[in-house]
Image 1 (cartoon, rainbow, N blue to C red):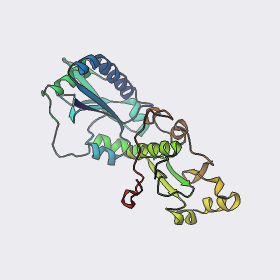
Image 2 (spheres, one colour):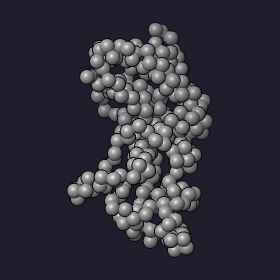
Image 3 (cartoon, rainbow, N blue to C red):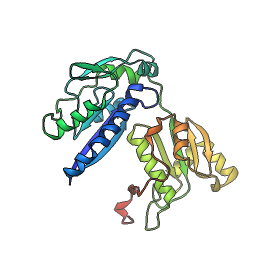
Image 4 (cartoon, one colour):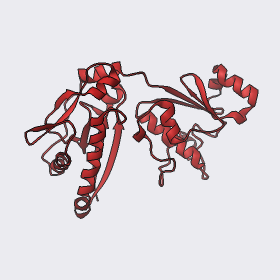
Length: 275
């Protein structure tokens, strides 16, 4: 089976109507193309990537928001931008976002046809990936500089056999969920730190707030969840929707609390032979 990798890169799915509409149109286009993909033996993987920092922009060679790439190739044959009020409000300055040009007309919210046509052009070799050296556009520099600073979360956990607790055969489903969530947050540029008593005892000593809480209530108070220096939760991990609220994140960044057959993240101690 041949694989199609589709990357949907965007700045915001909470406020920006342009990004929200593009995500919806992409879903519609893929639904319409599903019979074709099956008939031609293609499997499709869709990656939704919230570009929250200039480091992520550089990693993904992000030019303009929103962007849809198929196997590394942008479905848009030309780059056009115009003023985006929504992203301008987020950044506190004038910001231009992508406008889609199709059949001589310019669209801020792309019609389904432009995405279908773009996907098919890439699949049939009419559009190739751009391998030019990447330079962060001034427009994105303005956005990242002006947007409010992301919140920082620290997770202090009970003693575990390895940094994630995913060693051995019997894996705790809750630890698997948390590892998956934290990996997703980090991939989206969100500042999350994770410490457990076995692997990072010095972090418990250094943090006076955590140290005092454990002294008062014992290790039963763990896990302790801290956001921007304040304890926001103890004795349990946040649910996925609580992560979103605590960190003020886009709703689509995390899946449901119990995804079907999640992939087990590495516990980070494979060299010791426990995984």
